[in-house]
Image (cartoon, rainbow, N blue to C red; front, side, top):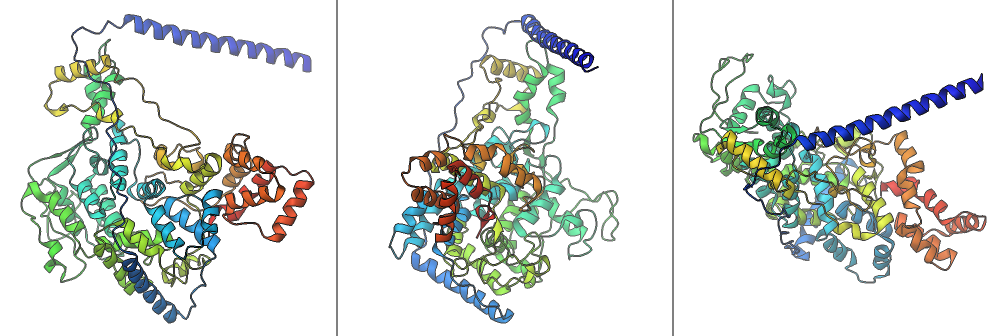
Length: 637
């Protein structure tokens, strides 16, 4: 019976192999036939130049505030925290150990663990200002910009690819350039909200193009991200749990009512123009980024919805633009003195109001978000709902943080510099409180938290390849900007001829994305594919604001214990393995591995146990596997 089954299996295998081979041959033959049928491209077509990335922008390496100014602001923060601790009858945590603080600073500022060399250099220094010097050094590094980009990408729901074949590479490059230039936050946001043009011509247009044809959804996200306004329910009805009404939501949406964020489908025009010489897919590649555009209509077109059920207006009535207010005196403030009548200025007026230093929520919202990034818990939770700052765990602290942002002229690097100098930040970490107690956390120190997916990935790359990963970048913006042409001004014949010329110039060749284990998360697709390490460890799908997860699960454990990453860390050519094996003594090897994984030297007890294990046959890769799978590696202490 077994012989019969084996024969049947062999026959099936041979048949399947032959069928697959025939199928492959048929596909190749069909492709060759198609190419043979394609008529030669006509002569005399316009020749487009070779595509190259735009020159790099100048990196801003200058820290503006003096050490004394930083110390003064940090001292006031600590005073507010001391008042909150006294009120809660909680003692401040003692200062963190040198080792814990070093690792925390690296993870929070540049998003990865320090290398053994970086740790050894810090511990060897006897300079009393070495912590302040390290903070300043990290804040102007490539690593800071890489880490800040992934944090910002989660908040902004940034994707490399979007609906309607949208490619956001130019937006990606623009965001990274703003970080290199250390552009003030209010200017960055203003430019995103007022951008015009297409995905092929305007980097900041990528923000509004994230929700093409969905202005109400985009407004809801905009108010949540930049003002902490909990307005999503008011899109359909008066908010049952907050003060916002549907009328107020539509009045805000009217500021975008004279703009069109296009949701045009490139497949339709491509279908109409396709020929043997220029396929539908060819045309889609050329026109898609131009059709994804933001244009001005010249008039405010938003009306109340058909199911609008409140007394002050009827369904279909035009909406009059009106700004949100959190209190009776808000409208007297300088932020509210904008033009709400000229339809050509509505978006500019909205952006001026939102990013104004006297906007009641703008500075405080980003201050609260960055506090959470570095302390693990926000002063007011959740960060998406700051309608009532009196509900913050420490209202006086929250107000002062917003004042620092304004005083620093929205320089987010300087603001975080202040946070890193506080006694509260440099204290021992606390265990994360229960969910019911998070809102009242008084900040005796930061909270113990697991690395984000991006921090874990970038730390692993540091073990494999070393610190050179910080300087590696990917830039695909020129693969989008090369398609720029005045699509809306062209006739169909001109569009076709332009696409044909671009094909003849080699513009339609497939764009290959660089992948590899020497790239930081910021250089990879945003977000990565679902089966990638980053996604398995909680990287956001970028569908929702701040959707990254720090929750652990069994698949994560299995990936760490048995997956490709573990093999790479222990591989013969990995930096970790090569350097460990180059060391002469067992003591040196153990110390090196502990510095690499934990940024500390082993205790005497740990050292004795490990040396005994190594004498009994435990190899360096085996020891690396053990350290890699400890909770201490994955947590920010």
